[in-house]
Image (cartoon, rainbow, N blue to C red; front, side, top):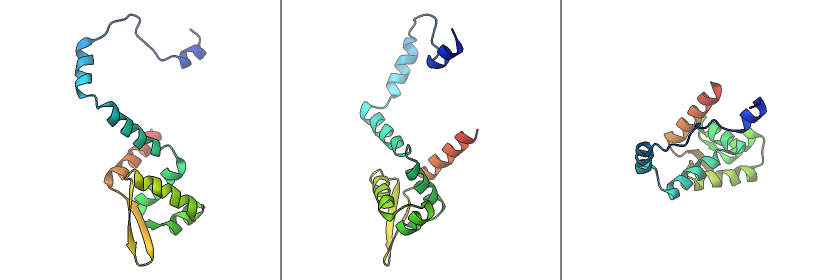
Length: 123
């Protein structure tokens, strides 16, 4: 097999044998298709660099739309659109302070996901 072919095909067993006991164990703890779809939708949100930049900025400080737009060099409308998506997925929350609306990460899990992602790409 050439190196080019080796890259295209994942390694596989040389014979067919299903490890029934292992398959049964995994099936017993496997989340439902609906749960896995929700998880895939959750991770899809992290597939956009603008949203990642917003999440990273919010991991550092609570910010308003104007702050985020200035920080990322983007328009407020584009930032508001992304924040709406992040809010729908419960990744960010907001609070009003006078005339300002301040955004922050919804919980510490989001910060952990970002930190682990950064650690992984740094390896």
